[in-house]
Image (cartoon, rainbow, N blue to C red; front, side, top):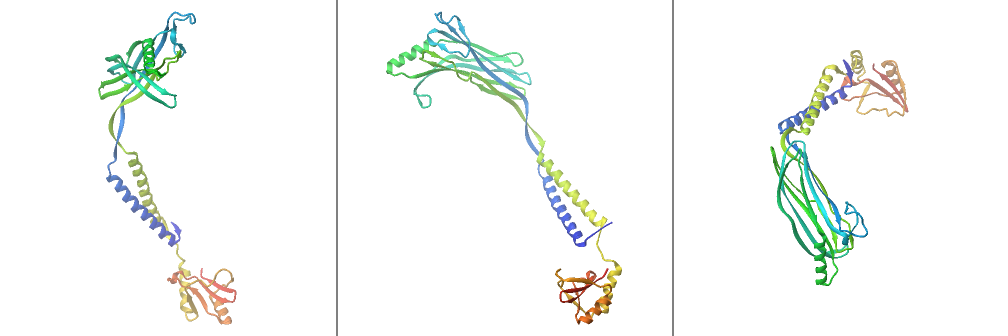
Amino acid sequence: MKTINNKLRKQLLFVFVIIFLVSAALLIKTISKDKYMDKKEAVISYNNKAVVNYNVSLIPNPLIEQKVLGEGNIYLTDYVDKINTILKYNISSDKNIQVSGQYEITALLESSIGNEKDSKNVFTKKFILQNKTDFSFDSSNGELQKEMPLSLKTYNDLIQQINKSVNLTLNNKLTVIWTININTKADLGVINEQMSPRMEIPLGNKYFEIGGKLSQDKKGALEKTIKVVSPKYTQSIIIFSIALVGSILGTLFILFLTKPEKRKKAAFEKSEKILRDYKDRLVALKDNPVDGTETVIRVVEMEDLIRLADEAEKPVLYVYAGKESEISCFYVLEGRKVFLFEVV
């Protein structure tokens, strides 16, 4: 059994009891709360992809031998016959689904004044190129495809008429929008998505490039809500349980595997005998008379200290802290000298 200072032993017991009470209270509070939380879990994950590809058919001309130019080129307006577009839309998912919905194709003719940084719209005219049309396909092996030729001459002629009628040179562009509305019923829900790739074509210029957001990707998932044990709940239970068990083990260790430090019985009896035999010669103090700067001279027996006190005509001092069992040192002070007898 390990011997430790009695004061330290009591302090450790006090700390372990406080830890036990706090941990027990927090553990009970945690257990009494709802340990479950809502968590969304993906049942079907999917990815929509819509892309518009194109090429440009040319009229016979003395400069360009090719009849068709691919994407990403600069096109001379006077040599363009038509722009051939094709929309491709598909959806990939971790489970096979029957995809259905509607699509439509519209064009916006926009005229504005000012530069690119500070332009103001003058008018916008909308054209329906393809009315709303139903579609459906199997996600495992199908897709929506729609070809649409665009004649720029129609729109450029309209722009020239507008410029002449208002006697202004406007900034003009044609924006073609493929709007795809997906409304698909699956086993565990409905997929509602919208895709809208677009093509932008400048009008009224000698040459042009085709821009816009021609490709779109959109990920999604059908989710269901499930009940799961909250990570915070589990973490709290573990922490408070460890603290509770630790405080119990610490308390048991202090109570049964340690003992308070005590003076030996013979030394205690010797101190009692000195107090009894020399009680008229002894003076009890509340504070230690030695501050550490004096010269300390130890004597072998209490009788030696009594003789020194007689010769110096000084009292024998001891510090009384409330318990006689803790008295172990007796002093005689003579100037900066301290004669000390310690009971061991």
